[in-house]
Length: 128
Image (tube, rainbow, N blue to C red; front, side, top):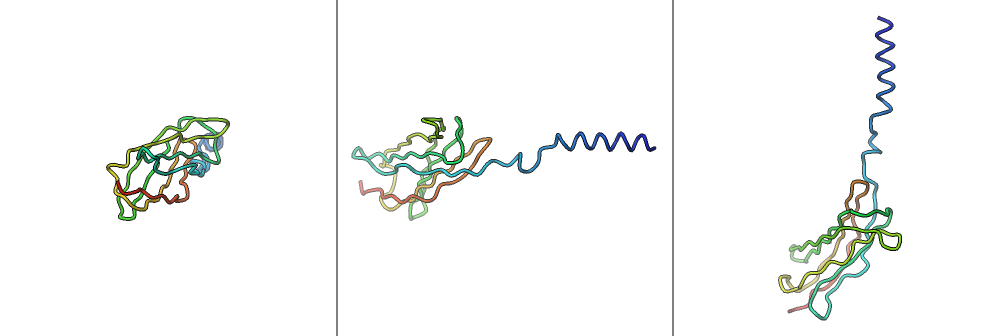
C-alpha cells in the first residue's frame, strides 16, 4: 500500500510540472496603435497600425470602422515585422459602399501569443 502511494505521489509531482498553467495558456496583452486613418483624394479609406508589446510575423489585424449609426466595415491584414516592430500593414476600401459621416476605427490584434485592441480613432467619411 505504501509503495503504491509513493508511486502515485511521484507520478503526480512529475505530471504537475508538465501541466500548462493559466499564465502559460493566456495570450499576452498587447496594444495596437493606429498610425494613419482617413480618406485620400481617390476616395479610398486607408488605415495602418502597429502593435506595441510584441514583435512577430503572422498575427491577424482587424480594422473595424464603426459609423455613428451603428453600421460597420471590417478590413483585415496579416502582421509582419518591419524595422523591428509588428506592423499591421495598409488596408484600403473605396468609400462608395460606406455612408458619409463620423466613424471610429478600432484595431484588434490576435495571434497564438498575443491579443489586444486599440484605443478608438475618430475619422470622417465625406459625402460622395
